[in-house]
Length: 342
Image (cartoon, rainbow, N blue to C red; front, side, top):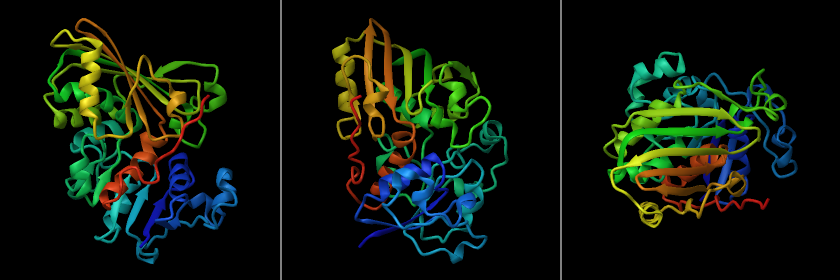
């Protein structure tokens, strides 16, 4: 039998990637996809890469969710704040994967500080499982509600988790992360519109990025995390991709081979994490669900390089990976997406 899914928020980049991935699957039926501004328009006219591939039309999200078709699972690819209103009104048997930040943080005060609004569904927060597949696979398999990680958080956590889990970190951790313009969403703003960014390079949200508490929260779950954490984000003049350089000091002097073996062992059951020679490249992971990790070592100084596609492994691809786990499917189903060279 086909899984029946619904998508709230199908007109943005995250929703478009969900559609691209799920429309190719014979075992999934998309029962509905919402987009208030695009309501009534065929999906293929809004997302021209899907033209002729589906007869789906966008619908407006109804005030009464009971009028929607019955589904097994819903994806929420909406701006921050909207999932807080929708999730409490969904039927109790429906599984939910939220791509926004609404249910990532367990601390309501941290949520207020970093997202600028009160958390209005704290009773549901404790039921949400954090959806970083490679570090929380067992809990995701048994979850009804999953909060998909942020894109920067995904790249950073996959780079740091093996070191935290094995107790190898000491001192300050510095993350220098860069993202493409699609991470700012489909609507252009003065400082995020690609024509402005394409010949520019700048930092933003120093020390205050909303993914910081999410990263630290998950690292405390993974292992003994007590390091000073410096996290800086930058605007990269490309459309897709995140590249993070993670600078750490280890407790023991390690060799490059030893670190590589540590990472390969930690991710031995994680098909979508690849440990590569030298530096990864965002071109290698573009349009795929892979995270490529590279390593450079000098004594106790270690740099981990992490590259992902912010819209796939950093959003829609990881959401589908989590759906596969939640329904007992092969984790790789529908995600054997090949990159291009170049």
